[in-house]
Length: 106
Image (tube, rainbow, N blue to C red):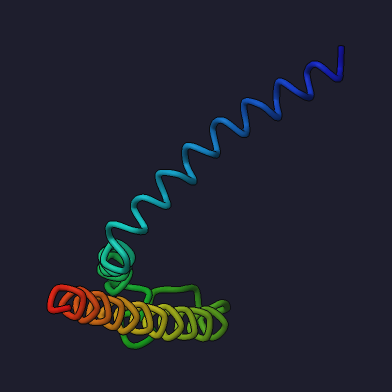
């Protein structure tokens, strides 16, 4: 009986996650880097008020130094990743339109 339960769990998990991976793949192909950049913009817009290290940074005094370092690294890495994705999306779009115009003129 435990073998049947295992196979039922594996089958339902496969069906569930295959749909999620398929939806992710379609979204990834349709909205290359734009969805990521929009999501990061919304997240950072909410965090800017009190989590960016500086005068308005709100944390307990005992945790402030470690938290400032953490959030400084978090925002630098996230912004660098967003820049990387924006450049990648722009170069992919430029490459796709260049190959489309080259095949149209051939």
